[in-house]
Length: 172
Image 1 (spheres, rainbow, N blue to C red):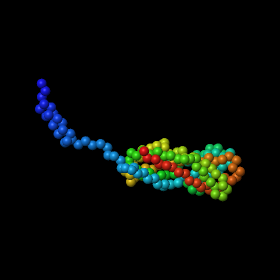
Image 2: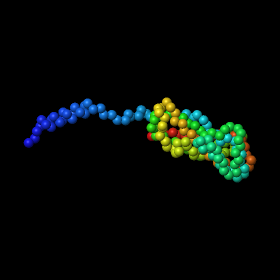
Image 3: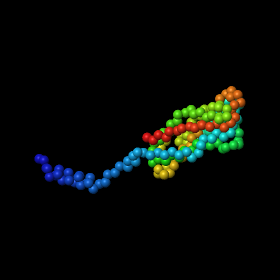
Image 4: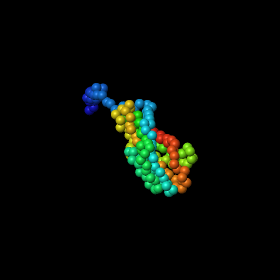
């Protein structure tokens, strides 16, 4: 035999339980997701000289310079430094760094060009998750790179080189 009043009682009890209980989930992120990137410090390879064989000058994300090939470090002039970018985003935002390198730097006096490769990140890789406690506190991202000095530069290498590199910070 079917007891309708018994099932009706359970139905009201169940309905009452869900109406009193508060159910919550993770708050949705603000739409659209906002990411702001500011350059705080430029990438600087310092002073060096190169022989006829050329080589590479590398500055890591932690401001360490290394050379290989026919390159000799000089310890005067501007200090060696990795680039520093301040990334403002909500905590937990996944960001991927994309570059369109290699980039070209040019000596304004001689026209000689050298290549710059961006290849060192304080995040350990090109994709990272923001860790700052809020969107007003910057996530500091240090970026280093490598200059490829051409061989047989015929003495045209000395001088100051200028150029830009572009990084895209893509949020997911």
